[in-house]
Amino acid sequence: MTSPSPEAARLASALRELRTRTGLSMAALAAKTTFSKSSWERYLNGKALPPREAVQDLCRLAGEPEGHCLALWELAESTWSGRAANEPPEPPPADDARPSRHPALIAVIITVCAVTIAGVTAGLLLLPGHPTAAPRPAPVTTGPRCRGSACDGKDPMTMVCAAAPDTLATHHTVSGAWLELRYSRPCGTGWARMWSTHQGDRLEVTAGGHTRTARVRDTRSTTSYVYTPMTWTSPGTVLHACFHPASGGTAECFDGRVR
Image 1 (cartoon, helix red, strand yellow):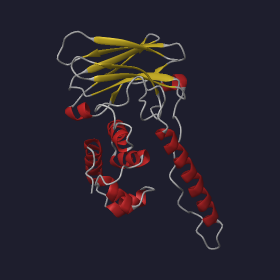
Image 2: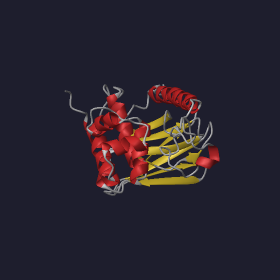
Image 3: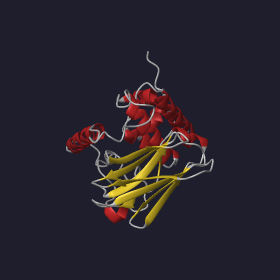
Image 4: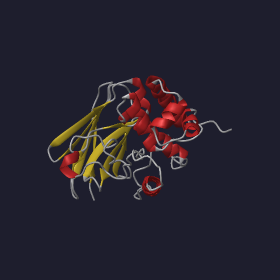
C-alpha cells in the first residue's frame, strides 16, 4: 500500500490527537457526525483524505479552532489531488491564472448529497409509525459565511472564503518562506498567507488603510499555511504585503491588484 504523503500524515496525526481529546470511540464519532465508522478509521489512519466537513466536525467536537487543521487539510488536499505533483513543495505558482475547479466540485457534490439526505429524511417521516422526532441531517455549508464588510478582520478559512480564491501575487523570501496575496470574488475580500516559515515570522497586508497581521506562533505552524485576517476589497484595490522575518533584517514587500 502506498504510504501517505507527509502532508496527509501530518493531517492524520492532528486528527488522531483531536479524536483522543474528545474521548469518543470510532462508533461514537460516527454517531455524532455524518461520516461512518469505517470512514473515520480511514481518515485517522491516513488511508483516505477526509472531506473538509469531517475536519470541521472533529474540531467542533474537540473544541478546537478550525484554522490550523483546515490549513493542514488544504496542504494535504493539494498533494492528494495531484495539483502539487509538478510543483515545488509549495502551493500553486502565481502565473496559474485559472482557479482550481476542485473546491467547486466538492461544493457541488456536497450540495447534491445534502439535497438527497433531506429528501430521504422527509420520506421517512411520512412512513406509518415513524417517530416524529427523527434526527435531522447536519447542516452543510456550501458557500461563504460572510460577504463584503461583514468579512473584515475575519479568518478566510473559517468563513469559507478560501475555497477557490484568485492568486494576485507570489513572493519567495530570502529566508525561504513563500508568500501569496489572495482574493475571493464571492466574499469581496483579500488577504495574505505564508508557508515554509520560521517561528516568529510576521506577515502584514494593507488595503484601503486597514492593516491585518499574522504571526507564526509555534513550530507546528511552520509546516502549514498561516493566514492574515481578511480585509474588504473591490476590483482595482491594491493589496500591499510586507514580510518581517523572525531573524531580523529588512522587510520584504510586494503588491497585488484585484482584477
